[in-house]
Structures are given as C-alpha cells and as structure tokens.
Image 1: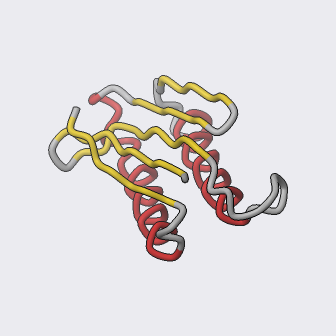
Image 2 (image 1 turned 180 degrees about the horizontal axis):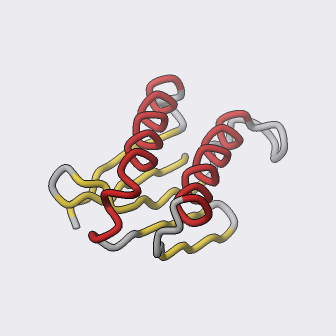
Length: 105
C-alpha cells in the first residue's frame, strides 16, 4: 500500500510524505508505484530546483518527505496543489493501492 499524507495549515499545503509500495507487480513493472514516484519527484524537483524554495526533503527507498516553511507557501502553492490533485486522481483510479490523508500542522 502507498500512503500519501499531505501537510496542511488550514487550506494551505505545506508539504507531503509518501511511503510504501503498491505491490501490484514486481519492481520495475509496477505502474502504480511508477506513477506515484514520478509525480512525487516532479513535485519535489520543481519546488527545490525551479521555485528554489527552502524545502526540507528526505528520501529513502519507498519514502519521500517534503516540508516547506509557511513563508514559502505562496511560491509553492500551484505545485503542491497540482500534486495533490494528481494524487487524488491516482487514488480514485487505484483505490486498493493508495491511501490519502490530510494532516493539520
């Protein structure tokens, strides 16, 4: 199961934590993990390399966490909201393999 937790302060997204594996296929052939991983890295790379936000990023096998300071929320808003919308769509399509939650921080 892939767990996606989004960090919010009110309606403002301040980051996310993605962990786990879907287990729909062998490593390298798992389209659910590939979709989530690709979207997660795109969001993180856009925030750190394009927006140049001061993000706290942690990456391990099957895990990525990204947190931004509240002061960076305006510059990262579109990326984080787009990523959230994409993850909601993936969760609807693969509901047996992805769980989404929002956490107030």
